[in-house]
Image (cartoon, rainbow, N blue to C red; front, side):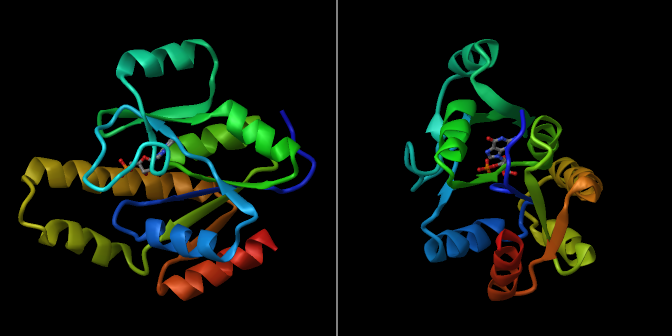
Length: 184
Ligand code: 5GP
């Protein structure tokens, strides 16, 4: 599958890096960018809404979607499944719209394989040491949970080597304007 122009943008980033805020700010300034709403098997967090944050489905429904080839990519993250609906992305690209996916690095690399023109952007923290000490500083989690998160930070950092751009989230304004430069 190939698209003519660079119109599909994928943003990933380690948890705790503030990518949600960056994306929210970006979308508020560009109503021509369509955000793909993912499907997930995780339980909604307080305040999250069906169809706004995610489409919430059961594991059975998700697996059926996978079997029917409905997902462009999907991945397991922290014990839950997350996936991007193929029809939304393809329809939007065919209409000539910019599409933005906010997905993990495993999903991003799957997209790049299928659609080499997709632009992969990784949002990194100003300092990994600080991110690690922030994760460690939360005394609410067990050592095991912390180790799991730290490993994942390392995994995502490694995957980011295959991304087209790595942006440092020092300030939201800076990160947004760097993404705007990429989108053009
Ligand atoms: P959260 O549970 O915090 O909303 O998301 C957990 C992780 O799943 C984040 O890294 C987020 O970017 C990723 N994610 C959200 N939707 C998708 C998706 O459709 N596909 C993949 N591969 N990852 C996703």
